[in-house]
Image 1 (tube, helix red, strand yellow):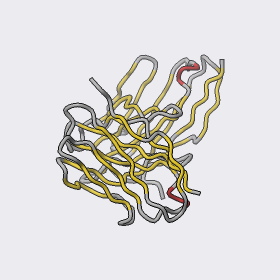
Image 2 (cartoon, chains in turn blue, purple):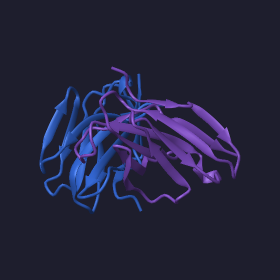
Image 3 (cartoon, chains in turn blue, purple):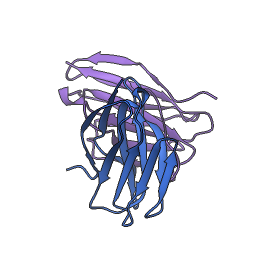
Image 4 (tube, helix red, strand yellow):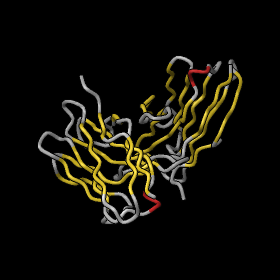
Length: 110
Length: 114
């Protein structure tokens, strides 16, 4: 059983569309992170959210941490082909090491 | 500033063999974490080394072992390879072992066990 459940597993959209990826858990996390991984590369950190209810924006990407610190979402506005990749959420359960979700594969078609 | 590097890039082994994977941490980082990423899955934590000592271990059997050197580079050793060990092995370095310290990942070593 995954500690962090990501949905959807796979998303294929047209350039210019908006999308949201979800990361849910029954556990509380001290922080949640979002990574993007391209084929043949390691994950690259996009953002860390720490405070319940926190919203962070990174250009066209908006990240939200749930009030109860159990879930997070990533929203992309006007997706571009360069956004294609594997999006991973990862969290630090209190007193433990980083755990990852299974990821969401995003494909943006031009 | 040199990022995290891993070697080799790809490796093919047969069941029962042993393998050693290497990781050079980013300059100034004293902590290295190793992860296993099976196809279609997120990375799973194997263990972490902080200042040459193991500092936490995930749910992996003892045939997965590691080492960190005085220059903070690290090795991951896997004995008695099994087919299910086929995966991308990632190492990540961080400034320290704190939960909030950002981990910087290397490109990984793709291990195939036949």
